[in-house]
Length: 414
Ligand code: NCD
Ligand code: ZN
Ligand code: ZN
Ligand code: ZN
Image 1 (cartoon, protein in one colour):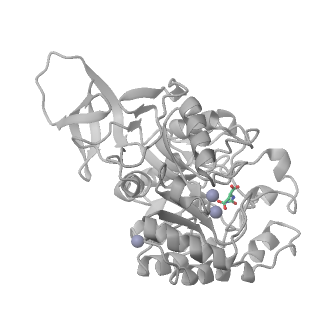
Image 2 (cartoon, helix red, strand yellow; image 1 turned 90 degrees about the vertical axis):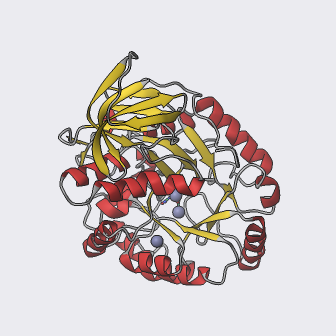
């Protein structure tokens, strides 16, 4: 296939021809003489995104989401690779369970996927199937915290095996749990000190690559950056604050912070101080989220992440290069994937958008099983077309791909 259009190539927009051969980009040329059919794409062509932090709830919680609906949502939001978290039921903490989940993904996923194992005694066996592991430093939804001594032992092992560890960073000792009656009190019950303190504790932990999930403020980003860890921020901490009128629906770990903190996060985004934006797509049913005390923490976000950010580019708030680095290039690099650039030899995972084509986000149009979004009414720019491995899987904003097209990103083979 040959595409002609305006593409984001090597840091600028270029009118070019993109040749696609199987899964990869074969060439990017300014001019071309060919007898082959050339497909003209309007608008701009950008690399598709990679989301390193999703909870597709499969197996065990498939009323909230499953690998089919989750991956379809990702695709319609311009994401063509995801990394799924291990706090499913049962948790992905053994070789067998990892195998089981790979099978689920292979049967249901519409895009390529990788899996995190939950750090456990079986790390050595699991390491045959994945390099990526998750540790909860504090309890979160469907996730328990390991005991200190056990944790140290396991991280030692993880380090010696060269595992790449992602941390949920909050320190329980700083929680004022159960003392909340509304969202604003909940937000205060897991204060920033708990996040900062936990980041400081990581220094002593023996493992090679430290990836810190869902950082909420400039202070946390700075510490993580100074220490040489990889820092992730989420769209909900970028687009929502304690001022959001979300009630229990805005309950998430770590919690939303003040408008001031949110503003600072954007400044750091513009400066490129952040490494990665990932959705922490954590869907729960509406009926589960009605009451603040009972409500499980987490908000959905995989389908709206890239569209929300592209709208900020259109508004002139951030540059396209920052957005592409954080949702496409940096996350793909972490996986060792040749993805996130429109260049020869890279994967032909592309999206086509129009910068004037913003629209209000409408949960009825999203593909989540949970049926709601905390970004209802926010402006987003959704891709008209999405190509995954050279195949069109979204056309005129409609999903046209197939269940089971997604492959597991095998170790050393991606
Ligand atoms: C996540 C979930 O629901 O799985 N919830 C959340 O509030 N972020 C778990 C997590 O990532 O901590
Ligand atoms: Zn978490
Ligand atoms: Zn950094
Ligand atoms: Zn999460």
